Figure: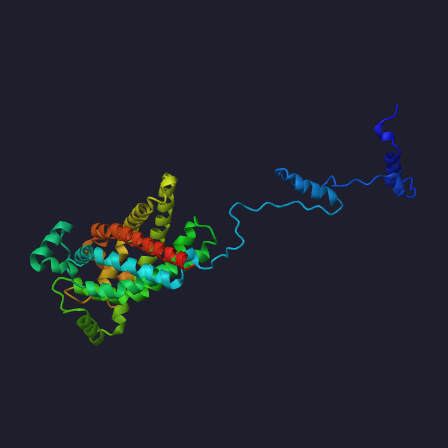
Length: 380
């Protein structure tokens, strides 16, 4: 009985491939297969709906041409759309404007709380500070100076907050785009970007922050921003404006790292709670995440903020003057005078300032970014 393997074509093929019996190849006895795929390489199979009859008829007439399998493109593939190189679709100057608006709104809205914090951190001057709470400081200020006393020095902050936050947010966005390498959940990139941002912005805000805090003091000898700048330049020199810069950077570097990392993590966590409502609750998410991040960062860095205030107000209204201006010397002086609790003086108003301030800042910043994104979309 003959089997399919006894056919002449297969026997000839067996002889041909045998190394022991080389026989001249007879192409007439072997029918060539139309397609041949080596057994060690399997091509991926793509299943497509059958083509219309007209297409099938055309294909049968040109069956001898080489066949190429169609590679399906993703559903969102649009070859006519080019990739925008700008981060989040915004330009550098748009980040600066959004950050400037956010910083100005934040500091103007929360300035009274900042005044109370400054007053609490310099209570007693060179003498041990009495145990006075936030309510007592507020009552005393309103009784002696009235509501206007809460806003003394706001002009200096208005001059410094806008430019410094413009630098702050633009540097942050650029660094985040660079360090994250396309991974939006890279918390380390957010923290490092925040450190770079604060080092750049502190060089802008520190001089005006010093003027602002000296004007916030009780019985301040300065009449206003211009008078304070002139007298400091004449009496102490330009280095007085940057006496606390090193302390400010040392304080704000961990503050910003904690702030940005907590903000991004909280924002991501809140979006995962109800992803279907993420677009509708976008403003609430930004505000809540910003408040959590601001409160935590403020509480951790309060001791360095006390050091910064002591350096910026030294020699004014009975405050101690420090010859070296080092962080260690200031800490030793505060601990010797008030104990370790003196390093946490003003932590309550500081948290009360930064929690809503961060919520206001981030929600304003994201709203400004959304405005520019919509504006760019219309122009494109």
